[in-house]
Image (cartoon, rainbow, N blue to C red):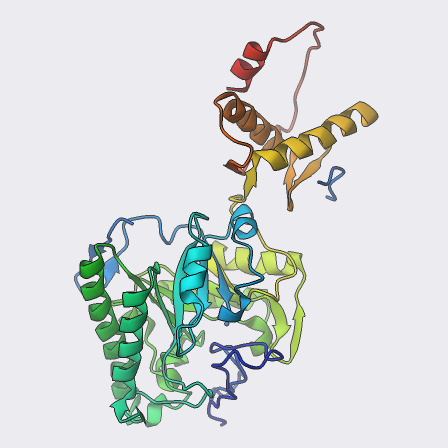
Length: 418
């Protein structure tokens, strides 16, 4: 059996590389899997969680409800558009944090007011060249790897106002059973996460706001502790959520596998599970998969009780899914689309089946709801830059109407919209 190796998956310096988290060019030591872990529209246009008994946070707010997250390289600062991501329903970005913490503060500043939460996505037991620093064995500048990583975490959360920390490479490279045994290796990883949780609790108290903790985990279910020292059950005692990297392209699997893997991990975790899905074919083929396939992948994860999904990664997404109907659109975009709908009705003497508002295609029921909301908002003096949320609405299966001629006053129209 081949044991896991790393090919510099931790750095952003090579623009041709597809991955930087555990989704890189790793080959696991499993016997049967190869892995490297993260109708056409006619009209176009914190509250602090309560502390759990085991020391983890029992989340009582909506932080992990309908999560739609995106992994982002820190080098993407100049190209990323917070307004656009908010309009399509993205709730969180996981920003890769190199050893220097470069650009994280700029991301926090850029996304301020967008409604999108910014997380520090931190690699643990690999160095800047992607070489493994096995917890409890290797040292960095004379400091045990675990202590060194905790120093980095402490520095980051002390310096930047992030929602939380997402630990990556928090595992063994497929050799946990050798160091010195599966059980002891698993204990080392679990205790490290417990230490980070304790550190974040201290920083949370200092800052007066809770700092969340997430852990990226391998998706190999019952084999996870044997090869990686990652126990879903144990980690969920200290983490607020788990992010299994269910990358079907790297494993040569299909959408059904995403569902069964998600279900297994959810059933073995006591905290929310945010399923990370691959947005491109595989590490050997960086072609983005089509929007329908990606939507099916994330929908399958959610159907199997994931609390949301995380797309790996920004820059390799052909079309963003919107399975929750939570996209936000500005009143200005709705007004522009309304003019096109008016023109369509006058030309075709019928309603269009779908309408494209901004970059989001919605059905007619959703558009009519937005039009009424926009009418009321404008009457109340709200600016055209106001965001309105797309709801999950459909037209009735049958309907009837009666036509009346006459003049409808503005007040009556607004009252009708209300």
